[in-house]
Image (tube, rainbow over all chains, first blue to last red; front, side):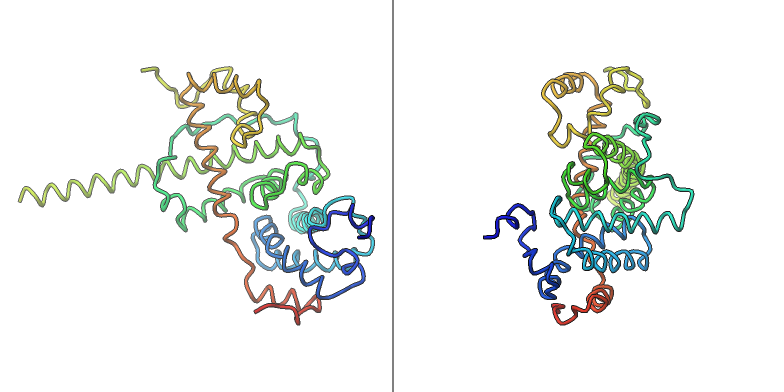
Length: 219
Length: 89
């Protein structure tokens, strides 16, 4: 085995074949990561056309850049870095007022204090995983500022480790943890608002049903 | 019963807020972890925040893999990269 290649984290791909432009090996790479990259892009940008552009641009850039890929990070981390930069570029083009991802804001805004203290954990699973809930989950992510959203998507949706996320974004591990914590607390807040409404609605439905039944019985 | 306020103002709760995310991941260091658990024994509000935070993360994990690339987008991707011969149907 080539000693140099052994050091490089290629996650089961032949770096030699990729760098030689082997289309079959490249197709394997696209097959393995296009789903995750599309998911990241669509949740960053919401518009399907934008997500498609990011997806194509990411793999075109990867194809061209593979020759100079030095293996200092994992292949997947490198792909996510390209994709994240592409997605952020789209956001900046569309919303020039958005602040930069690497701006040191950590000290300026503290954790948002929890306002919604409602225990909705015992709602039935079909309620918690309904189509409507899924839409709410997505909508809540959209409300996050970009710098929190991108960390949340890499960590909790694409399952990258803290360190991999830090590498993708050029942040410290601590900054990733802080942003993830803030993102999750904000999402919890959003979901709590929604689920406490649902809990009340369900309780009312239940109540109406039992009134209806007892009226029937008394007839 | 201890009255729980809608918006709790205990000083300890605020200090511990930043560790909750690591706590639900099971990655909090031992000392902070036991301080937090000690606090949770007496603070109903924080227990609810921890439980719902854990459930929030769970729901996102549970639904994370459900969004796939629409097949037309996938086809156009393979075409733009000149690898459509390897597109598995």
